[in-house]
Image 1 (cartoon, one colour):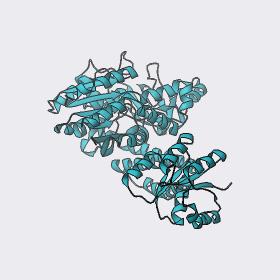
Image 2 (cartoon, helix red, strand yellow; image 1 turned 90 degrees about the vertical axis):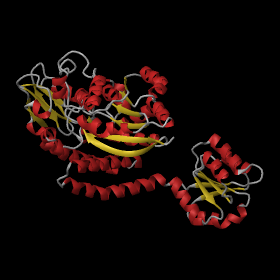
Image 3 (cartoon, one colour; image 1 turned 135 degrees about the horizontal axis):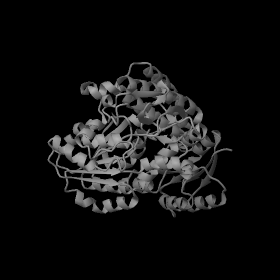
Amino acid sequence: MSVKILWADDEIDLLKPHIFFLKEKGFEVLEAKSGDDALEILEEEEHMDIVFLDENMPGLTGLETLRKIKSKNSTLPIIMITKSEEEEIMESAIGGQISDYLIKPVNPSQILLSIKKNLEKNKLVSEKTTANYQQEFRNIGMRLGDRLDSSEWIELYQDIVYWEIELEKSGDDSMKEVFAMQKSEANAQFSKYVAQNYLDWINDEEESPMMSHRLLAQKVFPMLQHQESLFLVVIDNLRYDHWKIIRPMLEDYFRVDSEEAYYGILPTATQYARNAMFAGMMPSEIERMFPKMWLNENDEGGKNQYEKEFLENNLKREGKNVKFSYNKITNLANGKKLLQNLPNLMKNDLNVIVYNFVDMLSHARTEMEVIRELADDEAAYRSIAKSWFEHSALFEMMKIMSEKGCKVALTTDHGSIKVGEPTKVVGDKNTNTNLRYKVGKSLQYNDKDVLAVTNPTDAGLPKVNVSSAFVFAKEDKFFAYPNNYNYYVGYYRDTFQHGGISLEECLIPFVTLNPKG
């Protein structure tokens, strides 16, 4: 079916060469000499693909016609054509949701380009994106063959996230399987890299990349030298791809000063990584210095109850005599209450807000069938995270932070990966239940699927007893017990889990934002 165009202009007779050109290209063109004629044609026609609308017509003006068309068909692309370059008219037209804006005199190539931009944009973008990724696929493959260092792995992962989102936006599924294979290969190589270097990083700070327990001292505390109130926003389980999809919303209010990533400690789980971040210490050091505040896997009670105390001690050790607040948000009511109290926090030098939604979403997706349906794949998981943020009390808070001139550091404690491949593990009854890491005695596992740490102290982790060990699942593996194996595998496959070694879990966004206001 040919593309149907409505062209409304009181001087339509002078545009016959343009209309003939379009018909020669295979387009069907309907002509109107006024806004009222255009509305009448649209009322009569069952379908219209695009409208060219003269801004300066007698009677019903172009802008008035635009508003009437949009009130009945908000998605119909409208191209405004005018002799005027007055800013006010341009703003009125743009505010009326035009698709393009052309200044007379127009030539046929401009008209054709505008049609293609609006009617074939998705197709053209999809084809271009696919072609670009095909080229980048080779480049990424070559980089995976190199001996990448810690910063190069971050750069590679940032590129992978970029192409994942771009391919998703293009709507072209032809490269979906190819991309998934390349991402899987990247995770395999990254897991080997971390397994080979992790213990050296923990025991040699000079050779180590930025990690959880050094983040505040090296990145956040230096920001306290400025006079503005600083907000540290920690969104639990916010992956790098999640940050990329909420960034455009925040850019209306903030300038992105820096967009980095750091390495989460193992296990990439809240109990370990977030306590280490606030305390500025590895878990074994926390246990030694604060024995009453650290709880091991099988101890009863919440494992992250003392983050405020850890933060306070960290500030003192770093010589930061500042006024600070700490708030943890776990439900909507808490968020709304903090939103109301936000003006009072502006008096503090540092305000920490821990927001727990994305982590709850990943757990809910495992346990609730309706959430599994809503977050069926990576794209849907990102979409739900984006929708939550857009309508959250946190976003409202950040708008106020911008308005009041507050700096923001945005980060998280760990990410998560969609698990796909089970790997068998055997442990005693005291072995923990996490699917991505195990800690216990006499653990049996497949060596190639894990990083095993037989002496937890080497990895900066508590040693529950003399023979306890940690094992961390690599890539998208998840631990399954031999008994009731098939049911267990079927239930947990394709759920989002954390605690192990993968690009998604270990490489964590750290972003600094300056208010535009």
